[in-house]
Image (cartoon, rainbow, N blue to C red; front, side):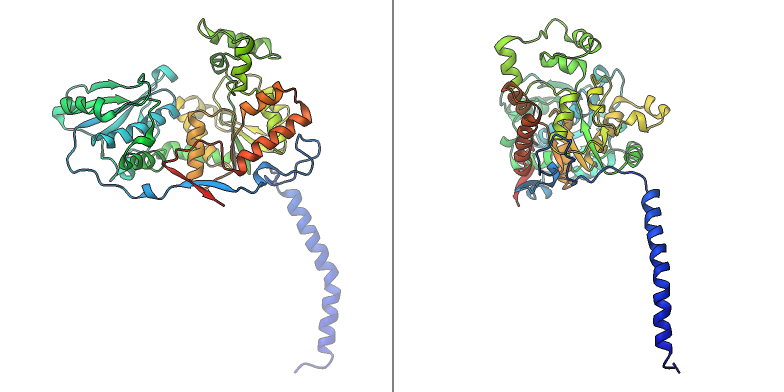
Length: 452
């Protein structure tokens, strides 16, 4: 039985213990913060006053969006194909990984359009990477076949009597304007029973029947998964990057600048020599009114220092962890790293042996995987990789994705804007695109706009 003094004693024991408990709690919290590794500032942090962000504004990702894009629901259910096939078709794809993927996506739709059985695609990469690597070296073959079932029939092997002969080649790469695959390619398929096809780059898929559109969407956005070996290396790379992080696809290589035909001032002599060596005789620099018009249409790649300026204008803290998704040969990189110092690359995070024995397509696949799964993704040029990454991030519901506007930067600098005025103008231009869900050029037959 408790005595009447027991409650009083218990109360005073607690009062005596409180200072000791408080001190212990404070020491524990202090130790936690001191022992914890430094991480990048929150992506929603208010930018420091020294950064090129309009006073009182927040980070671009913190802006409330009024519209977003989502995968349409209609193509998630396959539209059954006729039971008999018109023959076999192999899609021949050329270039780097993301060009190969673009051609393959188009080819899946064409195979369904022609009611053909699709043989595993052929990747022609020797001219691009000076090496050989095939579809199975990057992608999971069994997963691809399973995920396209019901949309288009895909087989690993074809009957011996057909495989003994080379397929009849149909190259549509140089086709201009709209043309009908059924009218132009189906007769060759029916005659030869086995054809190889390189799709046209400019073909409009919005004119395809719904079953071909559905096959395109499913094949491109649900059926292409990295094989287990490449995916394991990609996960290892992703895990090595400090979190949170932004993946930046920065393009300022000599051949790209030479191809743009744009003139730049203030570049190092080493960069100028590299550009001239890549320019050749057919890529003379544009001058006069033609040069101004070309630049104002957004045709000139952003330099690394221009990219750093725009990121600051968008409120991206300079302490942000940035993964540089880029190949070899980037010029003038000091203009970026002098501002954003926490930069990581696959060559800095992987062992030298791992990096050296990788195919070019494998390296590109790692950049793709990390970019799709990054906390935020920014592209300075809207090429094949950027189109695929923005689409796959949309499939996964990752909306912190932005393509920097070369057109806006060129027009505002041509109008004489600089420093704070230019930063304010770039903020306004990108904020408008971001909140309206614009700028990613997603295929409208695969993705639908959602009003928020």
